[in-house]
Amino acid sequence: MTNKDKILQIIKQKGKVTSSEITGSVNVSRQYVNMVISDLIAEKQVIKLGGTRNAFYVSIDYVQTHPDILPSTFNKKYKNVSLEEHNVLMEIEEKFPLISNIPENIKSIFTFAFSEIFNNAIEHSESKIISVEVSLKNNKLSFIVEDSGIGVFRNIMKQRGLHSVVEAIQDLLKGKTTTMPKSHSGEGIFFTSKASDLFILDSFGYKLSIQTLLGDITIKQISVSKRGTRVIFEISVDSSLHLNDVFKKYTNLKDDSDFGFDKTEIRVKLFTKSGIHISRSQARRILSGLEKFKIILLDFYKVPIVGQAFVDEIYRVFQSAHPDIVIQEENMSTGVKFMVERAKNEATKI
Image (cartoon, rainbow, N blue to C red; front, side, top):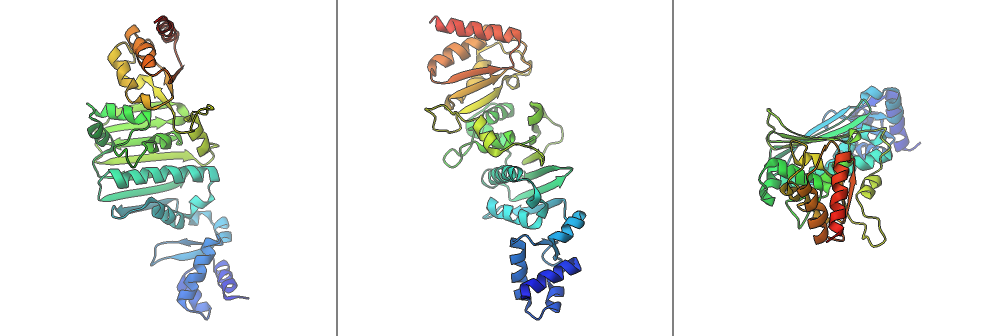
């Protein structure tokens, strides 16, 4: 029996064991024991639990019979100095072993979403400290990334010269919105929100909440103000969603496409408080920045009526200026459908 086999046998027999206890049972150095344990962890035969000074090791068999021994939450604060998201992910995988047992499709979504959000905090927030919480409870995997920086909505509003935080949130929901166009595509938050069951951005008194499964998006001004930005992401580990499905939904798959992020979905209701879209200026606000896309899906959910000037701006003025862009609609009421079809017909007479 090799020393490696002996060490694994000791861990299996004792259930929970420290490296000092292993060293005392095997006639080898502590450095050698630590090296062997690292190999066993990489081979997923052993799991390390606890902090550096209080670390102990358990076998996979022990975990299966004592599932409650694994921590359900990972918490850590990071100094925003030379931080790299992949190193943080590696630490989470090492110290939060529950994450290794989730389905591969959920693991891919988590890796993408966490990387995007944590990288945003590193590069955009200007915060000295970034806090992370990852948890797996009641079959729901979630993470929170929190900073005390300049605030995601305020940053977009300032960089894009917008008049209000609400306008910044509206632009963020369109996709391709970034304050650093040379190094970021502006796709990260957009696709992360689409890959979640629940996605929340909370910053300086404004809260954007997206409940993807319910198709519900809300923008609220709240009394308890979060300095900086708090991002909450949640997904069920039982979800059948695959990351590729999310990308495909917003990719133009036509023969002449370069398979880029060419499609966006606009929730029309979010661009006015009353839900009634009448003016030409309201339409211009919705259309701002959409010339970057090849397909625009306008979702008229809970929009009771639209005005002639509003639809004329979209289907005659904007469409004639961008004839290669395809404008699609969904969830139209009878009144909205009448006005949209009327505007399309009028546009063909010009």
